[in-house]
Length: 300
Figure 1: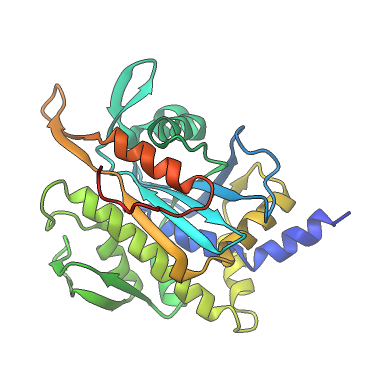
Figure 2: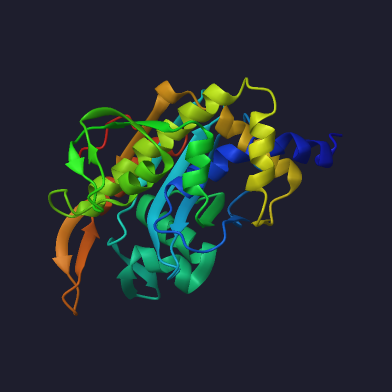
């Protein structure tokens, strides 16, 4: 039988990967850095090689809204990974027919409700919910030596400090945060593009972290900082298996789709997006078993 504490020690060197991925999609952070990893009841003894593990990654701001929402699937057998992004204004059934924006789900019902709302949309039960809030993102990116993000659009960031170019952009921590938070320059509902940018940033961070993997002591040292504030109900062995799957991702096999929909307003005149549920179900159906989108992201 394997020693779970040995597994936990091994997981320490892998923790920065998840920490960076989670912090990257967080909105404005003003509270002490925290990571909360919750194992949902849908997780049934996940083990590397057993199939796809699904992690719902949420970035929480000081108001406890989760304006960054990404469902990440990892197939440890092939190295494939799929991300489904949900714009914060997506109009969903929060509970018992009570409609609201998806970014309110975690605040109102915790990890279970957030996971349930996403499962209702795409049909995929998340195994874990990973929530982050804090101001450690800038320091994390700078410790990595910056991050290269491939942007399909050229745009000025919302804070006016930076102009993103179409194609690869080498960003510092502050610049990466500006990139992640910007949405006003985009046509239509800006959060659709912002959600896609979150995915591009996650991929850039994964590539940069994997480049650092051979530097002796780098990930271990970063892990010790990442452990500060970690709260989880996952076992040491489960934590190790989850993180090991993540580090086995092949960047060339990563796909990302953002769930769009129809623009509308709620009863108070606030902008909402009514999700394309047909597309949501197809994305879930195609990716649930192998973390790939056979038909791409285009609506049917």
